[in-house]
Length: 281
Ligand SMILES: [Zn+2]
Ligand SMILES: [Zn+2]
Image (cartoon, rainbow, N blue to C red; front, side, top):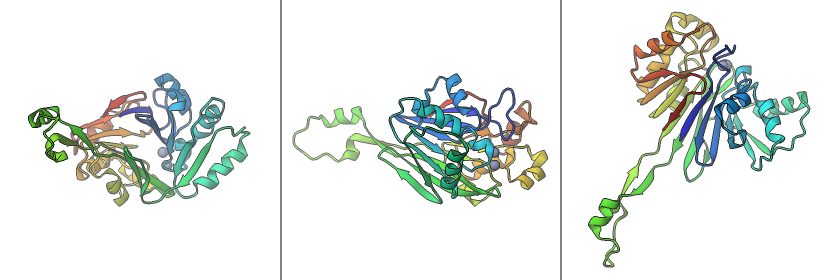
């Protein structure tokens, strides 16, 4: 599993930071969390073909999270994208997609389906499942969680011990295999610290969380429905997350060190994402 941070800025992009978008690549699946303006170009620069995207998960319909959607879909529809692009978002997403297709002239060659999701599991296959939980941001907003399924791995040492092929005796799978725990990735932005954050982040191996402001601007965070870096640290701490990656920075922070330090006050294993940063899990 590989994560690529395609954009790390909040509302206003900066020279170094594009609007928010995070890409999770897992086997043949490519899950895009949010799609800020210019995301398709970020894919190009990152060297990831747009055709790798199979699912788009929209946290909410503020522009910085969706402005890249029409462009990305238009480009996909001009390629030989053969699959059905799945788009998941909060209540109202279908209507907004329709309006978007009214506003632009699309040839609509692209096969896609739109699903509105609420609370709990909304997708599952043999390898992983996807959950969403409502966040508090003034409009319908969702946190997302990717959970890889546990895998049974054959342990060759144990197999040798049993001397397989065997003499016809039954072997318990537990005797020759180990369970490899599936990884969890949580995505939490834009919201105040609320119960939905904890549901999303619980037990995450990697928690990707907004840090729009440092705690010096906690009042602003409260006013605009955003978390501070320290709150992201608190969330990581209480949810037993293993690693915290901060995203969605206000353009006022030329340098994100202040945000990283603010979170590190309460949670050690934290870094600020940069555009094009990659993490292998
Ligand atoms: Zn935002
Ligand atoms: Zn927002």
